[in-house]
Length: 404
Image 1 (spheres, rainbow, N blue to C red):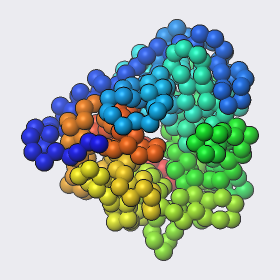
Image 2 (image 1 turned 90 degrees about the horizontal axis):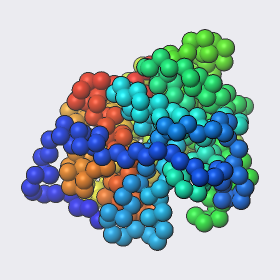
Image 3 (image 1 turned 180 degrees about the vertical axis):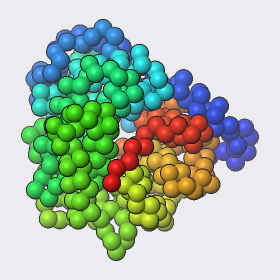
């Protein structure tokens, strides 16, 4: 476990210093396949769109130092060679926003090479070695983040070589829309942490995926107006927002439900769905009152202290003592967008202390919990950088696009 410091240099560390160190700590590797892409769950080769992997392709290691802290479950070290598509999308966004075109293009090459024939992406893959690709586990959130990052790259760089990849991803998202106007989750599921069902049709609609898709539509519209017109993205975006208002918003509690499956609303509270990403979404729609209510909800219901660190837990009611670093960073950004600079910096400060006390890349959580490991990780580090870029350099870098 990693205790919060009560004295010493990490009590009041310099944010800019640790943002600079964090930027240098991310680990990128050439994406190399020694044979056909392989999905162990289907025991078969995985068809992909590109078929050819450019020699310059890169990927970010999602857990670059999985054994830095003692206490990991057996087998966790195997993740040292794994990259999650969501993390590569975040890295592509970060590289694009800071103007690192060479790295951004190399990451986009990897995403293009991993796109499945139907336009979706699997969940994770081996960066080098056996060609493993978890293509059977597809989630709309991952697809939407890949689309969003590719759209921002195209918009910022002017490079249109991945325009077809972008369009195929958008078509998959639009095709996932159900009769209620919500985006279905995808396919595949883990049954008990060991058994995997690749044929499972994930028809439920997760609120976080709706937010991801909405921002993907907005970014793609800005990046390619002609494509937006052809695919009717403004209409898709408006329909999605209306469906969220109708089926996912809980007016009695002034927050969003975790999701909906058929006619049944999942009224559990998830940090991203109820408050952090949801607040950024409503701020972008010029609904500051609703965004403020969502933040008030999660700060009241999700507040926790883990190993002395004040933060927000990912779900209510469980787990009660897990600090979800990545989700808490999004709350800091939401407060900033709403104009409460003091609350934003206060929410951001513990992650600066965490960087100092635990080193960078930033750990995913300060203790070992299921799905929330005490391990240096790309995702919280990239959110740390994206949020810090706006708070300290006043350069919005993630989900800053607005729409009605």
